Image (tube, rainbow, N blue to C red):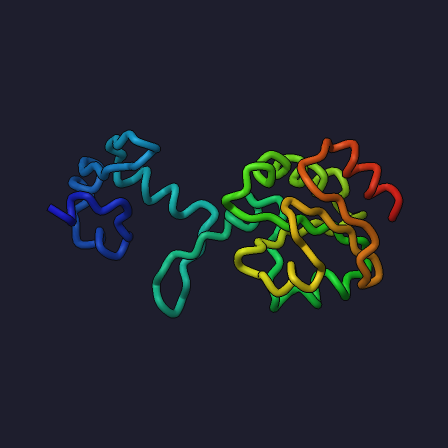
Length: 174
């Protein structure tokens, strides 16, 4: 029964199935609260787009996530190289997954990243995962957006603010 509910079947596990049977089996696909069957051949096609097969282990690695996410996360390990050593100005959004106002400005941050691509680097710091960075810069309330230039904090905007407020702050450092 458990094998009938497997969401993805690898091509290696299907190689022993004859080609006539390959088109007819259906797997269950989870979309929200609905489960609907999907053909095996369609599942394998969607896995092959935007993914690559790791040569050593035979696992599939999704590469589409990096392109779908507009703003990259920053952690304690990448803070120095991505923010402090950046040659261009950097906007950093301090946020947390449970923060309602953070979710409100998330689309604005994504828009700004696209709008200022090449002029500004835009990153996000999850304060739950990187509390050291938040403490170092005195983050007491989220969302907080900080602008860094030449490795130094130059501006801070606290709270869910309109896009125009963020744009005005960013324009000062171009």
